[in-house]
Length: 113
Length: 239
Image 1: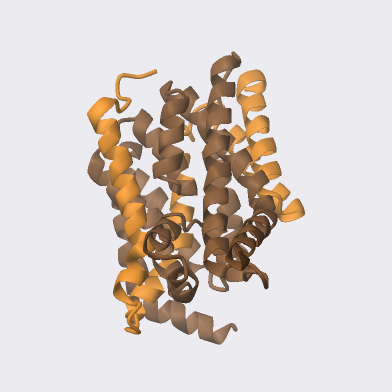
Image 2: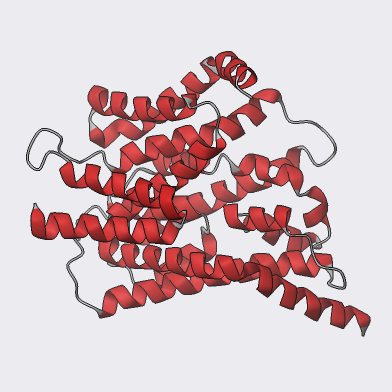
């Protein structure tokens, strides 16, 4: 465990902030558009196209500390990512893809590389 | 009397339609609880509180490394807003459905509007003979209770059994890849994916991995607004 972990006040604050902002995004249309007012085209556009762009970004974010230019040259990450995508394409079972992908990754970095 | 029967029917129907979510949420909730213990050392009470108050799938997962690394509050806030931006349009199709739940019930149904709850609310109408408002509320309550129970079980299991956790953080990558796979099928234009991946890599090169997120998020929002005309045109050309 590192020293940087949020504890006490900062932890409560972080949970509170995520809780309130999440609620705000979900309540947004009920507050602004339930009276028959139409949301602006830009809001609808961003609500639709931001999620795929942000999730693609989050894939990179979750791999940001992988060393590309030193052994094992991100090979375990690449193999595990391809495995997850292949399993998902094949069976469309999220649990299976996430579970087997993670186990394969753990096996690779603990025993192989 | 009829009202009581309609409410019981609503509970039974709600349980039936949420069974697929039961297995999914138990499994993902358990993984969350497990990751929370391994990365931060926090036990089941924190896992339970987070599952009760956050209840936001991908964002709740993402909260674990943010808490473990002591991320600044501004970064946590912005990330929450962007990861959950999709929820800003979910409600548009649910005014009538949630309007039947009463004032407090409506607030809770909005709070519990996850991707899976949205799919159920829009895809499965309350069966005849069941009170619609009660049905909608039970769907929300049941889904969240599976999630909370999963989080507690996963956390307790992780704290009881000793195992080498190296590599378990790949769960987060795998979860994002699975979500990405689904969105890839849904979207005709692949531009948003290119923008997200490109912005992430560019930001790491420009400012390093420690500060990449805010820079990349800013790039994504600006680029998506700038590319709006082009993206809409591409969608029209390839129906």
